[in-house]
Amino acid sequence: MISHVKIGRKQKNIMRGHLEKIIKLHYEVNNYIEEHAKQTEVEEYKDFFQNIKDKNIQTVQLISKYMVRKCNR
Image (cartoon, rainbow, N blue to C red):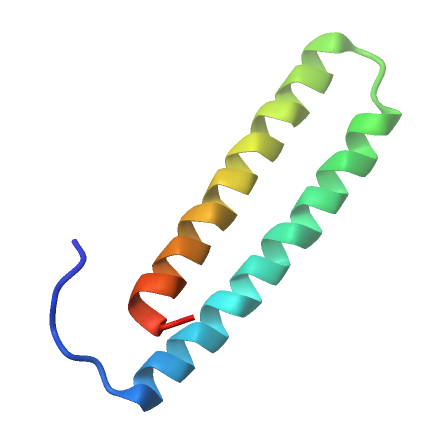
């Protein structure tokens, strides 16, 4: 999936900007999930919120690692 093609600085900067916005949105989603989890009483629902929060954090980590490798950031 990840190629070894030379990518120009302009394109790297554009991509990094896109990915930074996506990461910001994921953090907003995490905050939203946390707020709803606090208001939830049913354990099954709390577990579900924790599960999607964990997956969201994994997604942020994946994006961040890609950004470091491919956008030099």
